[in-house]
Structure formats: structure tokens, C-alpha cells
Image (cartoon, rainbow, N blue to C red; front, top):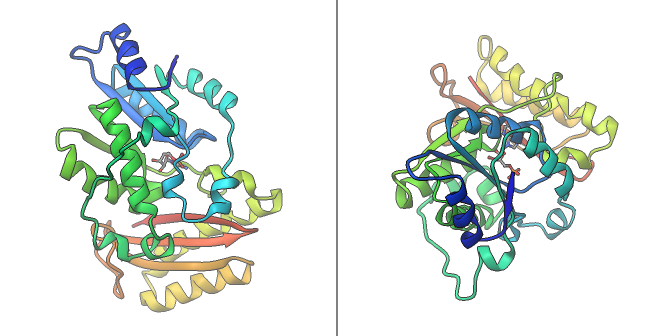
Length: 279
Ligand code: AMP
């Protein structure tokens, strides 16, 4: 695996990889890599000739300074994992590479997405995501980019960015990788105690329970019960809601199969965790 830090080094590395007509798959990350990230890398390796992964902790997408300060950094083990996962090139850009002097933010219309769930809870977050991913797409010029459905709303934001500014690039959304007991793998899980990690399995179990309740009761009662279970188990619930999986518009009625998404954002031991379930 080659390690590069800017667009010029990347261009040189890609010459060595003889990019020409070969297909390049790209996975942007913030590091502290786990099996979930590796799944995206594996899929890219299987579907492309060259796989590029970036690690950049983007300050612009953190609406909470404490979350930014505590974001785990595990570069050495990240590199080992990526070597094993057949990543060809690791891009490790500096702040100056991503946000050079005179940096002009791009504007992408994500009006409705900014008004629901993560939007109001994390002001400025999606704009930060758009700025960094736009810069990374400009630098890497991928044929295909991979994102995880764990960050479902982010996938829709990236789709809007692609449609507006990178129409030729293909996007692939990859299912959430979980522990056997259900907890979605996340870099933030490392900040939970052992007990916290065990408890956090309840999030997925509660999301999955909603699908079962669909057969018997209305969404309002199912969601109320789900919130009750989470609160009883010591979670602070920011949102636990049903929406249309195409639009993320909140829904008071069950939708037809495949269109229902239940989304959760909860706090446990001072760590904010998100997950979702589509059915
Ligand atoms: P992050 O480093 O958290 O910005 O994540 C980088 C990419 O990996 C994003 O597209 C995430 O949605 C994706 N990702 C994170 N956790 C998982 C997971 N458990 N399963 C699948 N993809 C994931």
C-alpha cells in the first residue's frame, strides 16, 4: 500500500498503478478503522482495479468540540488493517490540502435533509460533510465511491452532492456491519465501557422490534414503546422515529415494505450513537 498526502503525490502513485482505463474505487473515512470500514474496502477491491482510502478527521463536520477532541486516532493499526484489506493507496491529507488558502465552500441544496433528524441535532454537520467529501472527490476523482448505510442521512446528502457536482461518479451504499449481538460497529464505540458496549446492543434490538410490532400496532405506540425500553435501560433518546426511506420525511403510518426506516440517535456514557433499520 502506498501512502500519499496530497493531490500531486496521488497523481504520481496513480501513474505507478497505471490508472488509464482502470476503475478506481474510493472510501473516505475518519480513521479508527474497524470491520465496518473494511467491508467497504473489500467491496471496492472486488469491484475495481484500484482502491483508495482516505483518513481525515474533518473539523468542519463536528458541531461539538468535545466530540472532535475525543475522536479516536489509531493510525498504525489503521494502516495494518488497510494493508490486510487490499487497499492500494492511503490518502492522508493535511488541513491545508483539504482547506487550502482561499478555500471556497461549495453549495449543494439539501434543504429538507437539513431539517430532519441529524440536521437540527448537529447544526453545520452536513455542510461540513459536503465540503470535505467534495474536496476529496476533486482530489481523488473516483469512478465509484462507497459509503455506509449506518449513516443513512449522510448517504442521501452525498447523493445530492453527486447529482449536483459529480454526475458521472457511481455511488454504492453498503449495509451496516454489526457485532453478533447487534451493535453497529462505530469508531465511537471505543469510548464506551465494556458494560456500555454490551448495553448498546439494545439499540439494534429495539429498532428490529419495531418491524415486528408493525404487524400488531400503529407506529405511534410502537415508537413510544421503543423509546420507553431505551430510556429504561439508561439511554438518553434524541430521536427514535419512523420515516420514508426515500425522503426521510417523518411518517405517522406504516409504509409499504422496504420504505420504512426507523432511525435512532441516543446517548450512553456521554457517547452519541446512531443506527437505523430499514424494512
Ligand atoms: P467514518 O470513518 O465514521 O466517517 O466512516 C467512514 C465510512 O464508513 C462511512 O461511509 C460510514 O458510513 C462507513 N461505516 C462506518 N461504520 C460502518 C459500519 N458499521 N458498517 C458499514 N459501514 C460503516
